[in-house]
Length: 114
Length: 109
Image 1 (cartoon, rainbow over the protein chains, first blue to last red):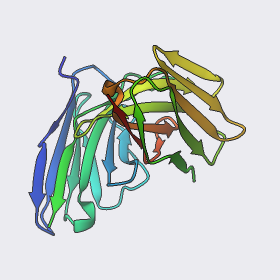
Image 2: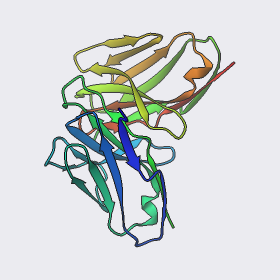
Image 3: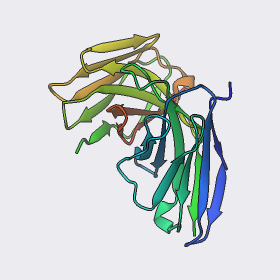
Image 4: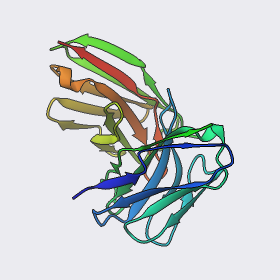
């Protein structure tokens, strides 16, 4: 199993450009998550999808949209990138959302907005 | 709003030392508390998960404790090794997890 994969690994954008970060998991997990991590800070939840067909806002959703394309894939879109969105973005998945289920993380996408 | 704090931000110890990492949270009505490890340039790996009804969890040289009433958790690492060098993050919650900023641990040979 590849686990959780994210593409691209690195990306540089200019202010105002748009892009989509892709995430896929091959573990048949129900729940998927998008986080951002800024220097000196912990991860902050952007959006999550508890199950296929549902999405919910996290702590910092402004400026982002998500799509749960199917059970495997959960994409994060920046419609008009801003320098404040420079960050490392992590995708994660969880089996069923049960009490003892942990999240499995991808390797991250490092995004720079100039 | 749940806030999670980890002290110290960085810690350097000689190999073989036992050490404790601290995590505090402001709202004691937590669902779960987890400890994660993050290596440079990598994603997070779950180490231990403590349910709100539990007091501690152990895995090998790692022991995590939870005291909800005081809003604290500790991660105890026994007989530290250079391979333990990483950033350790704690997080509380379930779907809407809140993370601390982490403790960057360096174990010197």
